[in-house]
Image 1 (cartoon, rainbow, N blue to C red):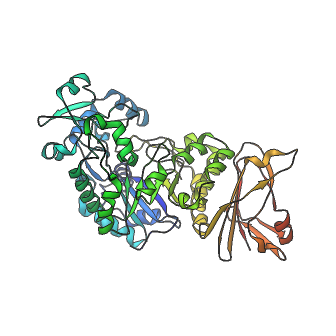
Image 2: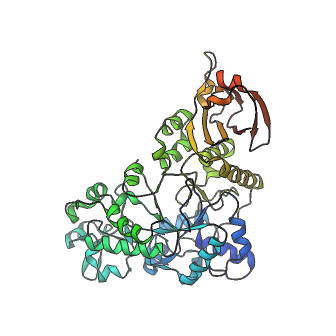
Image 3: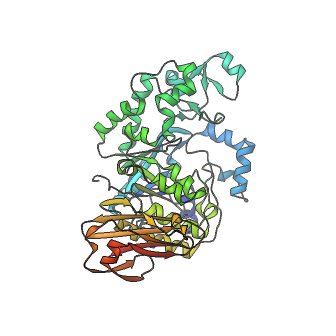
Amino acid sequence: MSVWPETPVIYEIGTWPWLTGLSRRYGRPITLADVPGEVWDEIAVPGIDAVWLMGVWERSPAGLALAQHNEDLQRSFREALPDLTPEDVVGSPYCVRRYRADERLGGPSGLAVTRAALRERGLRLILDYVPNHVAPDHPAVTLNPQWFVRGSAGDLAADPRGWFEAGGQVIAHGRDPLFPPWPDVAQLNAFDPGLRDAAAAVLGDIGDQCDGIRCDMAMLFTNEVFARTWGRWVGPAPDEEFWPQVFARVRARHPDLALIAEAYWDMEWILQQQGFDYCYDKRLYDRLAHEDAESLRKHLAAGRDFQDGLVRFLENHDEPRAAATLPGGRGRAAAVAIATLPGATLWHDGQFDGRRTRLPVFLARFPDEPDDPESRDFHRRLLEVAATVRRGDWRTVDTRGWPDNPSHQDLLAWSWRDGERRHLVVINFGDRPAQARVGPPWPDLAGRSWDLADLLDGRVFTRDGDELSESGLYVDLPPWDFHLLTFR
């Protein structure tokens, strides 16, 4: 498929529970090999560019056994799925035994059928890669122990939760340095040359099967973070960073492959510089969920080169459902923001329908939840409209108030222009009415009358171009309301 669009829109699907839901809907087992065409048509709505099938790789029996006996995990499973059965627990998709599509999901041939179905509809396919760890029963644990962080019998005795024994070696459990070890995975060694070679080969093989790869917890494999976490056991960092060295080989094999980083700790720019096309914008998510318009304005002051490489989202499989954390007006205002900013946009299966239960990735079935038709209609309309807006030159726009009315501080505004196509987005990101003058950044508005059509609700406002140029557009928005205006 051709080069990716500049502002791609990605739709994430939790593969296993999604297929379970389809099997129930159609009354027969459905895998990736035989998803009905009408289902793909429902997903391939205007405004969607790519589907991320989360969790297609072969899951670990050893990891599953651990999950079945972990009381904390079992408690979280029952909270999400009160009628939990043993068959609902299928293991973590991030406890990978082999990078081969799981046969229970349709295997490699089923994945190929799915990719072809998406391509027929103009959609790209994104798959996962987990650089930091593999399942404890991954073949490399015994065949290539040098690829792993290894310790001593003393390490195992001192910290039995952090280490395990396999094939006569003491190997670390995978971890994020801010949290306890994950008991179901083995920690790979980012500094080992052989592991880097193997990673390049695996990424190349994954790239044979898709159009983009989402790399889990990518910042853990930067030299600085890895040395801080594991330096005592792995020695000094090599001269070259992991990602640039590996990506050089991957790009030679797949020049148009999109590389996407799950990124935290404000390391997005570093990972962009190391070769990622897009990085999670977790900072924007936190600000939309918990902070005010001023914090968002500061975040959006960064350069366009940085903004273009970010993935904007309100939920994904790791975050709570947006309908639960951002209910009502705030959620809709936030949705308009992520849909009309530069960079990539990520939507999550069930988000449009207003699902409220975050499903642990170990589970094969969603709970029954009522759909929210109003939410679905709003998001589908927003998707379609945003696809026509995000083109060309983007810039933030100032809002001006009056000495006795500071409410303009709650307003966010930005514009897009592509030739004669002009759009202005204004969002009241506050819980009170807000008024302001918003200055469109186009000096040629004067001397004409303009119709400003709101693409979301259909209202049309006629305004004098001289007034727009001199004083700006007067805006009066209720709490959490917005305009998405096209100038005609």
